[in-house]
Length: 327
Image (cartoon, rainbow, N blue to C red):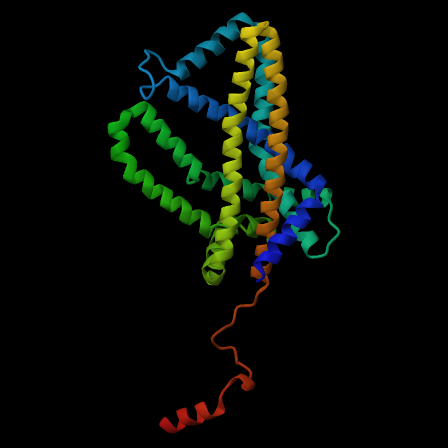
C-alpha cells in the first residue's frame, strides 16, 4: 500500500468535491459546531461558578433554569414556537450528521470504483444504511473519548476533588479502552455503509480487519493523527468563537451603545461559525475519503490460506529432497 499516494488521492478528491463538502460536510458541521460551542460555553461557565474558581451559593445550571423560566413567564407567546423550533433542530442534529456521513461514504466509495455517482445516489444508498449506522453511533458514543472527558469534568465539578481522585484510575482505564475500541472499530462504519452488514457483524469484521493487517499500523496511526488534527481544530474553534464574541461585544458595549455591541458581536459570531463549519466540513470529507480508500484497498486484498499451494518456482526442490531424506 502506497500511503503517500492514498493520502494524496484523498486530498485531490476532496478538492474536486465542492458539492460534497457543502452538503455532507459543511451543513452537518454547522449543527455539530454550534452545539459544541454551546456545550463548551456551558462547561466554561459551570466551572467558573464551581468550587474550582469560586465558592458560590448556587450553580450555573440553576442560573440557566431560572433564566429560562423567567423568559417563559415574560414572553409566554414565544414559548410554544421556540419549543417547536428547538425540537426540530434537536431532531435534525441527532439524525442529519449520521445520514450525511453515510451518504458521503457511499458517494466516495462508488466514485473510487469508477461509478458516476452524484449526491443523489449517495443520499439514496445512505438512507438504506442510516438506521444501523445510527444504532452503532448510539452504542459507541458512551465509550467515546470526549464523553469520558465530560463525565470526568462532571465528577470534578459536582463531587469534589476527593471523589475525583478515587475515580481517576477508573477514568484512565476507560480512556485506554476507548482508544482500543476506536482503533479496532475503525472500519465499522464502512462495513455497515458499503457492505450493508449488521452492527455487531461489522464491529467483528472491523476488529478482524485491523488485526489481520497489523503491518498497516503505521497507516492507521497516520489516519488517527489526521483525526486528531481535526479534533484539535474543532476544539480550538469551539473555545475561540465564544471568546471573540464576548470580547468584541463587551468592548463595544463599553464605548458605544449596548445594542450596537450585541449587533456587532452577533455578526462576528455568525461569520466565525460559517468559516469554522466550512473548514470542519473540508476536514471531515478529507477524513472520509482517506478511510474509505483505505477500507476498499484492505478489503480488496485476498487473504492467503494455509492450504493454498505456492508456485513451484518459489520452492527450493533441494530443500524438499533433503527434508524427505531426513524422514
